[in-house]
Image (tube, rainbow, N blue to C red; front, top):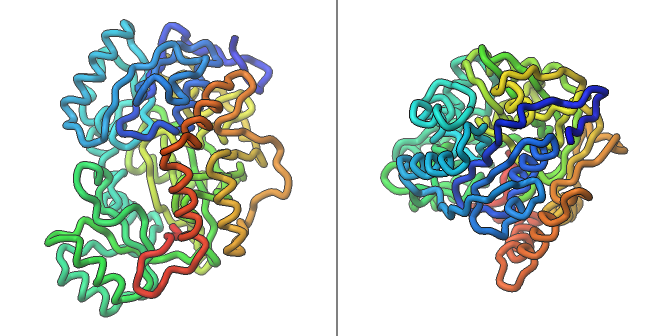
Length: 429
């Protein structure tokens, strides 16, 4: 039965199923569970690619079938396309694709001609998602279209890094240049803060002849605010659903996945995001991370994810529309009802928010604009009408030999202490 927070229930095309597409080994992904629930609660048949039969998404009551397909993210695109086509034949009717990672979004965009028969997805310039997922490509687009972003350097050699280090202002941030670092050994493990010239040169010696990194301006958290934009853009890059919010906590601290966030109305930010997407001609779901730099009063774009964000269920309008529902409605010829976003609503990822809270309190950091009291709470895992994903997450999270608890402990220790001079520490972008 369709469920909506508005007066008129949403009416999706229930003859068109959805398929959650994920490449790589990350079974505890609450975004995929959220997408299965979001469309499944409206009566849309849901399918998902899963690592095994006992992931949280695979056991959801709203999932009709899990296609067990372990991938690493290092496969050739042609193999991934063949696998998608095989799944499409087994579903037996056109399905809306819902990618949950950059690999999936890029593969779909770059193979639209082959995938366009058995699947439905927004049509976009084939090379645009890969460029947006690339740190260098995104920065170049920002410069081209006048969108603020952190000052960034793109060294081509170790000598370039030495010259850069002679005049650089520390601390700074190092990131992998391209999105698909899982295809080879990454230069850095995610976003890395570097505090001294000596620390940069020490790390750079391991980056090879052609460093696959960017070196970016450090935006201190004491002078900044983390904002997020989730939206769905239809044809002609028209925003059919657009939401803004504040990231309260992330894990790892100040650099990782959203652990706690609020919906906060921000017309200026919404306009900035809509204008940029219109300029580059993107269609589909977007998940943007921006940092408001109070030193110059500008929102600086850090990440443009050309796919559904894991915390998308934070955002829903008064008609019951989130970005995944908006995409399904639009691609199946339904109208997308308008409505105000749920200002003050809060989103919590249960398994990572507690360690994030401890780390943030140790550092003394508080988030501006976070309401004192939430107007409502959306939990990432726990849902009264679908308990098995939550229980499965707990079982996998705490089972003997699982890496998750050790990684939380290790990151909390590292994240709550200042980085020693010359060594990488927790990033803040």
